[in-house]
Image (cartoon, rainbow, N blue to C red; front, side):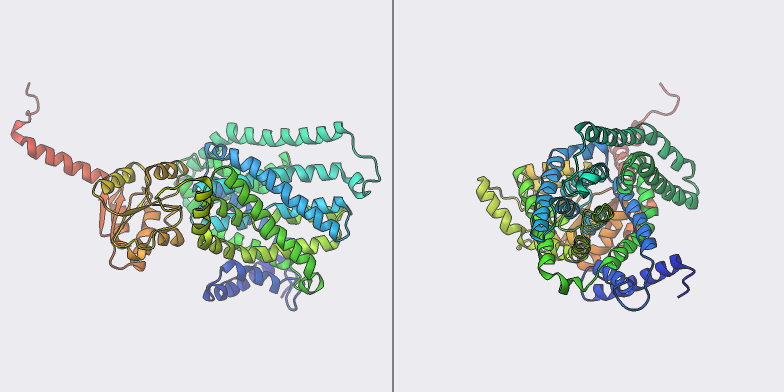
Length: 565
């Protein structure tokens, strides 16, 4: 290829091979992410043939992180983020501490100094933003209770790593000297921490005071021009993330998340999410390609024992710590397992930390190689970890209930009784869905409710309804409701786009199922009927029918003529 165009060569080589390997992985019933990572290995420096530009690939991957976190932020509100702080803050701190201690212990066994071990452990303690969000999105869990906890946990980890990246240079001479140099004074450390806190607080305040007013206005001004609107969404995400990093020392991911959260309060947030989806997907693929390029397959033969120890910390140590912490806070086994599986991998910040450790002369190259290999392998294994949790969740749920002394007849979240046949699947438990659920209960009908809102999930559990927690637009979630054996599906959510996807999937899985949905316009009615809905009810039309029926009941003659007294 022409080396004068490294950007084009990297994009073409990365995306082309990602499609090829991703399609093969999908054909083998594996996650396409495995294919994307292998594509990165193929264009990396450790395999023969074309070698893509690693620096360019990393920058493209950063764009993917920015867009992905921007999209996630649009699904969150500040209130929802604060709602999970009671578990996310202590949970992330304890999990980081456990992983760092285990990493330091492994580093000591490998003959490193404790300083190198601490940096190594920190690199293993933080999960990849992209992998975690992609895993939650694939399972429709981003806006569920467990999804909110996982994202809140991720935000705490990101903030902790921002502090680590600030403190390491301040401690640089002391750490590099293996403790021989004089440690920095307490005042210097306090100043470094204080400046970092002030920067993060300043950025958050700016976003919620200025950004909350400015960002929605910018989008509203170009809402009628689709091309400009899409460009505005992209520009806002990138500019805020870049500005946050350069002016406030905040990570790209954290800056983009808060920008998305501010935009999420606008009525244009759903449209912005849809318009930016193709770019988010494309750049997320390039992130996995960039990770694959860092992997040196020969390390499996060179450092097998050290690599196994590193993988034990990432896959087992972190997960067990997170699982135990979530259970201690009295959450369900399903929530605990989702958090544990979400965090059993490493990514972006891990690479930054090991790079800084190498540049400061603290971490040996062996540590970098182990972290990169663990990142590659843990990301490949992560989808299988989620699949495993779904299989063993009922077993752990029953044991934890016995240990806690609880009973309860409701099925555990994310599962469905095996003998459930001829039942109704109710999607959404809002104003409409709650009324439908009450009616179904009065009729003695068997039904399953699919809901992702944390507050509604709590109410459903209190009422003892059979519950599947998650987004019904996810094929995995909706199938857990027993769609293949259901008699009908009642789609009570107001989003016609998601309702259409659910109806289409329901019809393909169960051709004989009766599909009832709601709509707000004639266009939405046509859209849903085209995708398989048997009956679509529009609120305005139903109101008109009831008004006409009331007039007919009273009689037209009973009404007064205009102008009469």
